[in-house]
Image (cartoon, rainbow over all chains, first blue to last red; front, top):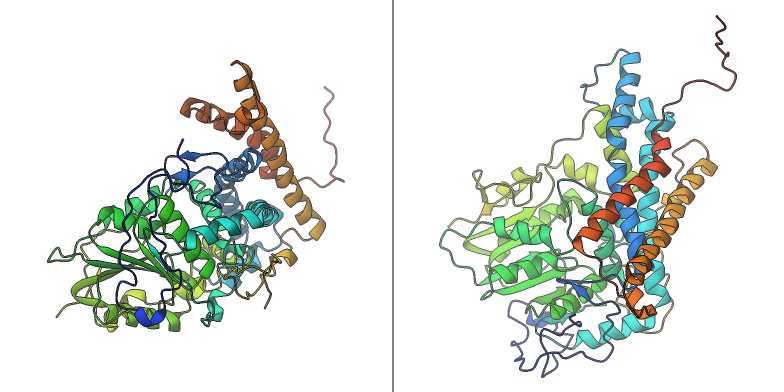
Length: 403
Length: 116
């Protein structure tokens, strides 16, 4: 059984504060690692690893995770039941079930129906329980996990830049996905998010298990090469806990790979986990709208499901920054949901509504109505319409910066 | 705005956040019903964790020299995982399928009796 960071060992410390002034250059030369099986002080690994996944630290916690994940799969069974009920309501009122309507129109039809509302209630309750079991665990064991992160902050192979004085945009300060504290307000946001999203994806048939990072690895494998084949530098914009960042480095081992995110706790966890996996990537707490790299520094700027968490006006700034950062001949490829407009069938609108309102997706209605492709093209990119989606069911936005 | 629930003097790199009002949500017309639903699911998580632990114990008892550490670190085989997940789904089905029931008779509904 592997211990954390047993795949590599650091022979020199790397400063955790790289400093925004260094933006645009690789902040710290790669450290040389010569010995293996180092388990640094503060390392917490209670139950070993399963492949590339450090097992959930207690058996009962793992079993509760297993339950909420199973419940999500069961919960999918509510979709046909709720849909059939809504269709009955529509038929009783002489409305064609295929009629597209607004959120308000859909909610008026279903808000008093307890069967339909049970579908939303059970989903939200299960989501709350998922977050609570992990937040409770990490808070109860806070000191040892803070020790662990502090030990990891200063070792490589990758680098970590934290900017605690950075002004966090309010749009990202919401408790997105009703995760307690959201992305920015809890020291263990990364730990909690990792387990919670593994449960989320395992409960959705078209996403599936992600314990071994199957989703980011699959997405990265599907990313095209720039036309000239040159990939020296890659940016993962809004990298979260760095799963795609790591997968990018694994596919492009010679490239300098960066992940940036507004959340300090998320990039801190991302750095610790990348180190555990022995992957030399650089993480920095920075904004997608203001990434602080030189113009044209990257061959590829990619992102994974961040744009729907951003208001439209800020999304335009993110797109403009991506355009500034991509070199001529390189590309920007934001992986996110399709934008299909703000109207839909009654059932779809009901689902969208409770996901927005009660799963705390503050900007999702704005995003589905956003002309994402149009804004990308307005910024100067040309979208290659032949490229297939990097993630099944998502939009394909392979946006090339031409000369 | 709210501040982190975790109280510590150590650096956490967490910042203020805007709390969701999901705790005030009423889907089922009466908050008591909503609360019961959450309790029911939480109960399921607790019961399932006990059952799953027992499976570990049972698996280990088949071997020699059972220790607490062995129980805590037991790694299920892929076959066991699949079998356990099936059992989990049976458990969930038993416990929560009633939620899918679409009843339509009020308590005062007339009793249609037959006596041929």
